[in-house]
Image: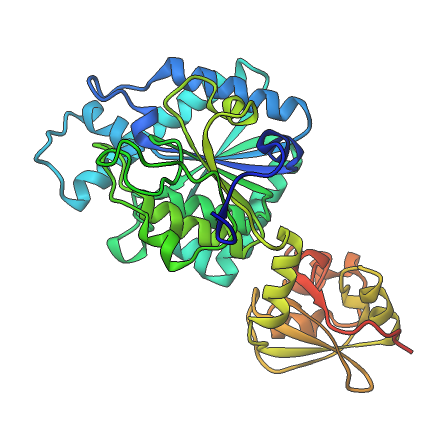
Length: 388
């Protein structure tokens, strides 16, 4: 197949090995033993070996892990017929402790620190919460920790839940500008037809565009513990590819599943047309609606074009009303739109700190805020000609 799906070119293992930042999603059906409802410790030990190997060669790793509810139910003695939302939330509350302890115990034995992060749909859709979560994850990665992320099932209602960690994994990959998202599944990847009912169906090794034909090949979930099927995995692929992140669906039904992908195990790669940085810049520049304007001096304009952040000292005036995390236009004194970005401050706060040095901000605001009004990672330059 060509265009939308094709044979893999080059080494898929090399693509994973070259990624600077990797998100690995682990499902409940892999993590929890079906018969006992207990942690599949031997399997998680092998995954921890994979994670430690990635960290040892300098790669940043985030884990999106299901399993809290599945572990918490037998721990609390919940029966199969106890399926109300509050039962799930109680199981999640207990299971998160078990899950976090397991990850800490197993990964610390391999010299890796972990941090637990619980997110809801609101945290990745609300701009301010999105920036807070992104900043927290960036700091954890910079400090060398492996964030272990799950949906916050204890407090989330049906209206603000993802309901599956495939899409949560994709949102985390988007939020952190990850290079690769690995979805460990109970199947090898995307097939031309459901392999359970069509034994001769062929695996599609590479997808470059999610067309209706590709989406029609998705089937329903067939696992007891998991809530996601191929449909949600393709939804995750769309989110990831739009963010410039490659995604791979691979079987977790083996020990050391990440190493197996590197060594050429059957899988399906979803290849984006852009890298994460390009996709994020385009999203900021062309998708978000600006809520205000930041007027800057010539020195700040030139610094922006060199790839710098916007500091308060270069801010001349603030127009409009906006909140932290809103998109703003950055404009020169002669009226040219120089850039668009996400503001680290509200309009009222920006007015307080305009023209001031970063070391003055705490006294002006009453709290220690960001040094930048708009960080370069949250900024897209619109003009290429020099600022006079």
